[in-house]
Length: 409
Image (cartoon, rainbow, N blue to C red; front, top):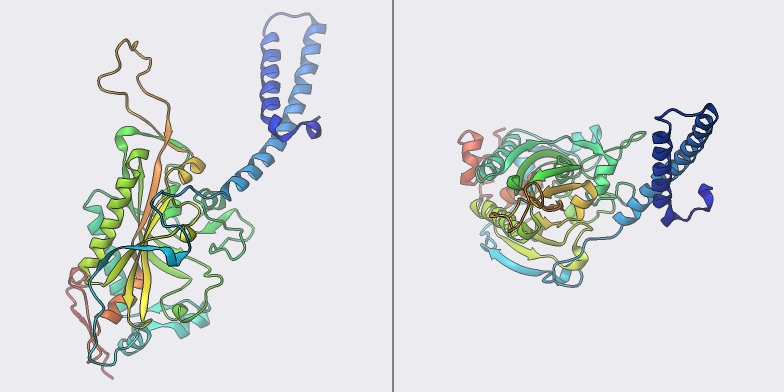
């Protein structure tokens, strides 16, 4: 019977059989002739067997439908530029490129002279695109993380440290494809788990399959985690050193909000990013990314690219995305709107006091991607004598250290 039922009728057939099974169960509650009871037992047994087969088939069909649905990207904001990355539009520029009156060094050379990195040992231990941070580079990473969490949490974001291994289904529901060709996701063999490429994934899942009170929105988090990416297909000069690595630390902002608030929250997130990087004295530009550069979940995305002298170009240091209800629909995150105040006239007590649940909107934005900010700091604030000046906001988080100096031999 199962094989002959078209896919679009499976759900209706399951519902029908469940209703018949319940009806049979109700009939058996009273006193019955033995022959009638036996007939009902047989009918119930047949219904149960039919339901088991259909429900197993329905689980497979639902999983297949979920995967097909996940291949459909979000809609885009009407103001998003149409085209490839080259069509992206600059919405803001802060500072200007530094004019060096000496031969500047890239972060690899500076790291060697200041004894901050060890890529060779990491390559032996872990493979290419891994690294050890040493000496003041360790303090600089910790300073960037603590500074970002301190600054963002003081404006109402709840700090989190997240799991770094998550279920593959959560990765998929957030809009990433762990099994796709050239995936950026590390999957764990013989399990349904993956390493996270961003804290966006575990934070997005923190309220999975739940209904949030309207009074709790917007709910804002600032999360610290390590991130792991395969960097499949990456090549070129921008893969040298710290720019593109398999493991790094990151501080991520994440917001759950009402649908009508998401554009405003998006502006808030990009403003926080811009203020953070401006306070460090970086030269950067903010881009409204074109349709061809949006990932599947993003309705609109702003990228920030900072000037990196060693690359002789701008490099991405952060992004801020409004994913509307793309992730929340898959993750099952809703809210129940508060009843109007005052309630509509002629509303009976207990009726119409709250409307149906709605899906929240989710947004994410990078506060600090540590390796790329280390590149920016080393290359932009280097001095002719080989020292590097630490940006003033970070000094309290580095024990008052103001300058990185070459080690005396």
